Image (cartoon, rainbow, N blue to C red; front, side):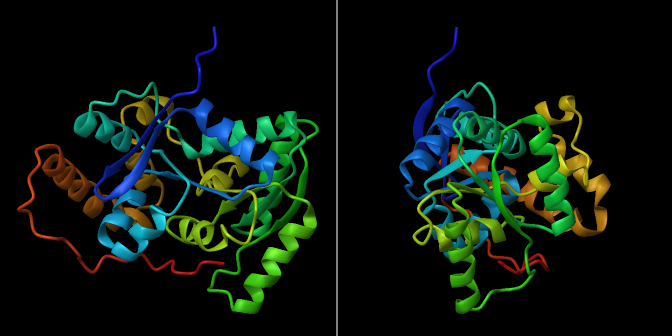
Length: 272
């Protein structure tokens, strides 16, 4: 027996509003907005994504301006339980959500646009989607320019996506660039914009995913750190303990911890 979609509302985790929802609700809302051609910016946030908002108040406002922010990481899901007593059946993992939306889009004849990453990765991802979901409509694709776009270039991107006939955009720019992109383009594109991050690389076979047992236990970060230690060590070894500390403080209603605004910044700053 199918359960009705679960939506318990928005709840702030370290100042970032997280939607306590399941896969069914997320897919249903994305497909509904695609059919109705309504703006709908979506992101799946793990600890790193939450911490980008915690450490940067401007970015926090962007994240809280998105329509749907699902708990991608198990520690974010556990945070909802620790602070608010909300027990979700599972996290809403971005790469899995991507496949479910692709499947629903194929079933409902909803065209998809792929934006971000490198062209080789996009083409491999496209082939995987076509093999998994016969009849899926990928009506456009373009790679990231790996830099900030000019106003004219942004307008050209909007026009290309509109002219393609797409009703959903999968955005694979990495966190936090993809959330910035979804926030900035939301009003210009009347369709769901899904910030899906590493889904492009995972499903294209560029990066391996952590084993299921590691994912269930919130140890995916360990697997990724082993895969890319030079790029990710500061992200995980600094941000994960900080997340745990401030989450515990939030759960205990401790407000005396000093505001933390360290000079933490990854080198990937391009948004287009």
